View (cartoon, rainbow, N blue to C red):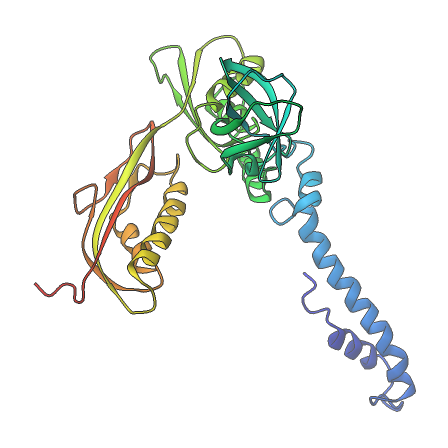
Length: 342
């Protein structure tokens, strides 16, 4: 809108309004008097351009995005990780334990010498470390941090909030329709995506599939989502909130390297890129494209070419069931000097 309102254009427009019989050359009194004003106006137009981006939800970021969508929803807060801690002796509820700079508080009893501990620092960081813990209380017991009971999640990212907002305004949710259940599910902190199956278990039923903020299967989320939906849904259908089934994507291929990376490095990068590719298919595609998987491998630095590429033992696309999500399975890469020479 204001792309042409640059310093040069504004200054030239001002000078054009000055009679030609007046000295308007650079360094003249008129020029030097108008130049600072043109510079100031250009800066104001630049801020106006940024202001428009900050107040519209398709481009707003951070606090401005929060304010832009405030009338419809709020950003989901970070969720603290809840982990399992095994001890050598009985410990008190409320006792605090440290691992890798993170503090975990004992918040529940699972069984004898097995406790539920909650990380004091919300976010995915609480999921990352396992091992021996150091007691911050007076106790002679030792402890080991292990399983994730409730996965920690970071504050909802801008793009996730923007996507949730767009879905809300584009797809009207009323009276417990499909969109309504999807919106309710994604409002729960920690939920990254949801899929609704009307009549999923027969007449009068609704099945909701949920994954966490990293698009991973979480055994703890369904109960949280179910509890929330029960507080907002209308009376009627029987609701089941479940985790999807994992569909392992197993890949075997011969690869020709260009010499810049070794096979181990190529495999590590490919597995990470493959995981990102499959996450983007969660609840959005009914198949995993064979051709696109090949492109993922070919785009890995160090890969020159490949052949004998199979996915789950076949050369072709892999169908994804309505209750499945694709995940990385086994990746077997073999280095060869030449490919496609048979």
